[in-house]
Length: 120
Image (tube, rainbow, N blue to C red; front, side):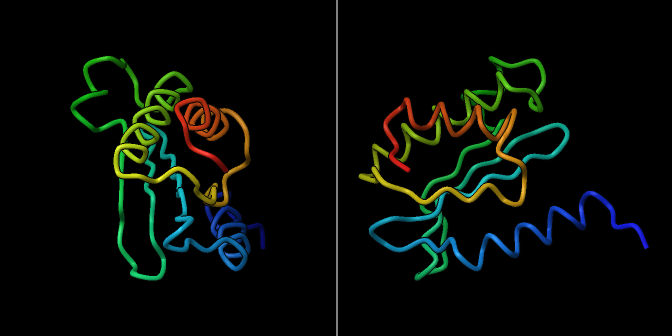
């Protein structure tokens, strides 16, 4: 039987998560993109909690963008998550692309986060 795109993405994500693990000194930057929005979290997997989060639903970004599911919105989320992380003292992260291809919105978010001060 043919597998759906979502099922294939989840399989890739499980495969990536076997290798990518967030530690207290280097937490995991997890990215998820739906059709209408993009979300980013910095997670400490040892404690199992989210340290920093940003998305296109945040009040700081919502007024600046028309649609949350495009590359421009992803760039703004990337800069927002990086600035929030740097304020909390997080400089180095491990990037978890969430099973998505490193292309388009995911790449734009990662590049913006790098430019704003995160290392990965």
